[in-house]
Length: 117
Image 1 (cartoon, rainbow, N blue to C red):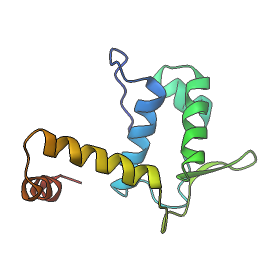
Image 2 (image 1 turned 45 degrees about the vertical axis):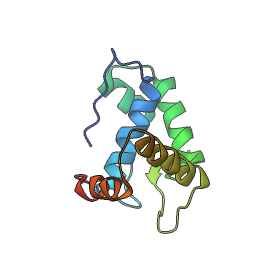
Image 3 (image 1 turned 90 degrees about the vertical axis):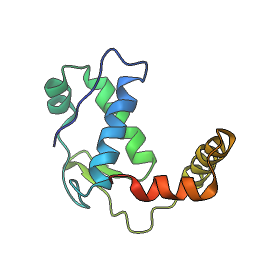
């Protein structure tokens, strides 16, 4: 599992780590049931505070992407029907911003289809 962070970015590190893990799940590099590194292990690998990784894992748990068991660790949750109203609302905002920037509906659809995901 390769996670990269940019310490010079304005995006908080916990958010960067969260986004990287979501990307790995979305690209199927991480699948349901896969174990994630321990909090300390990942923190050490990235050279960051373990509390940052703990915060990230808790966010991912609250979002339904991972399950945390103190005996087993952190693993990717079953994601078959993971729906989120916030996701749909955020997507709508992004698409409306695209329309406000002058993109047509067809151009937005084309952009989504051309994404390398």
